[in-house]
Structures are given as structure tokens and as C-alpha cells.
Image (cartoon, rainbow, N blue to C red; front, side, top):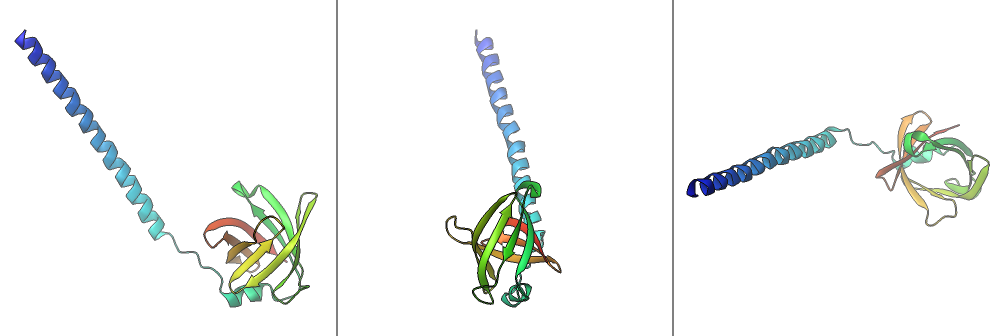
Length: 151
């Protein structure tokens, strides 16, 4: 009877140890993946946002017409019309999405483009220049929201 209990106890210890041993490599692997992600983010180039002077220059000449894409894989598309009918850096705006038109206001304050189409508070965007007249807009300077090309 003693030998049976010894065998059972030894088997229980072996199973417990093997269970603990299998958790350790999984934990180490998860830590390595987390560290690799952190290193990749650290190596990623910082977003070069446009300065206040560059943003003002982009909206300097007359009213703007900008085609934009947003959402997953750019599936949401539309056209914004920015009218300079209030000041050199603000005015009314029209956003056309399919057959619908939203009316609102736009303004530039420093290096920030503010858009409000009557739904909640104005959305504040920091802009990063892609090409001569193409920009990527980051909501509150953090989350990529849309890309647009202006005429």
C-alpha cells in the first residue's frame, strides 16, 4: 500500500512541476513579445506635425476643396469645401458624403485645424504633410483620423 501511495505522490509532484514548467516559457514568450513591440514603437519615426506657419500656409490661398478618406482602409470618402468667409483662418464649411451635405465651420488656431459639422464639440486635428497638397490629420494629435488632398 505504501508503494502505491508513493507512486501516486510522485506522479502528482511530477504533474505539478511539469505544469509550472510549461507556464514559465509561455510567460517568457509573452514578455519577449511585449518588449519587441515596445522596441518597434521606439524605433518608429516620430510623426512630424506641421508648424503653425506651415498650416497657415497650406490654407493661405483662397477657399479650399479637399477630398478625404477615413475609416478602415479608407472606405469612408468625401469632399470638404472650406470657405474663407469669416477671416483668413476661419470660415464656413461643407462636407459632402455621397449625396448628403453637412454644413459646419472650420478654423486654424496655431498648428491645429478645427472642424465642427454641428455634431458635438469641434474636432481638433494636427496635420502631417504627406506630399505638396496631401495631409494626414491626427485627432487631438494622437489618433490617425483621415488623409486628404486639397486643390
